[in-house]
Length: 308
Image (cartoon, rainbow, N blue to C red):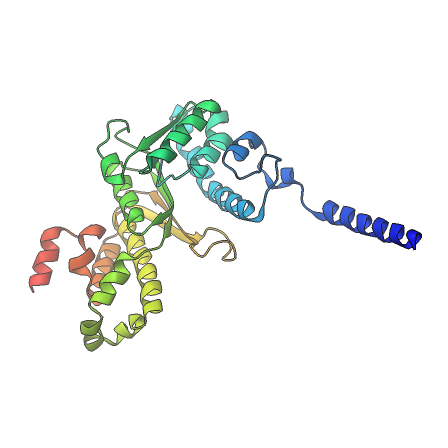
């Protein structure tokens, strides 16, 4: 009996060793040169240096976003230019810290600005940057509207990012990028509720006006359609403002439902057709008066159109 227990224990130990060997090494999952100390401070790694499933998902998203941002940073850093990046709705600044750790620190120039409305998170980010000697990181306790006129920010920002910016925060980040003449914007929208509210408010009238209103007759469709149309309008607005726009997935849908990644690169070629289609979509959905100004339609055009 004792021999049987011993054999069972050895068998379990052998299986455990094989399972452990089959698991990918933590170092295999980290980028070359990635600071383990930083990941521990961001609570992506445990104090023992382990990575749980939730943290693995978060790290995967940030790394995947880094894959899109790094070429922009390299392109804009030529000829000694000190590239600047503003991260709106920075939160705990996962993205900013990892960008600095993997690119800015070794590159030796450039600056990251983390913009966040929650003062306690700004204070923690400042302390962590000081602890890690990330000297070219600044953290500002500001709304996007205040950031547009803040003296602590330069007149021009090269890259604007907004990761999972909720509701109209993505539109605010776009407005900031346009004002700061950003060369590129990298946006991951989240939880767009404003358009859904507008669609619900006028639903009865729209149902009688157009059969398209069937697309938002049911609440779940209203929410999803509002999110989809909002992002379409954002892309058209950026194209009308002189940007070339690419839309893709951030990561697989199994990792995040808020997964749309909008990358806009400034070319200076304003697409008149994009502006015209933007206006036509707002008209088709009866949204020009409620949302026209947000998407660059002059207020006088909105009021005149509404009066007619």
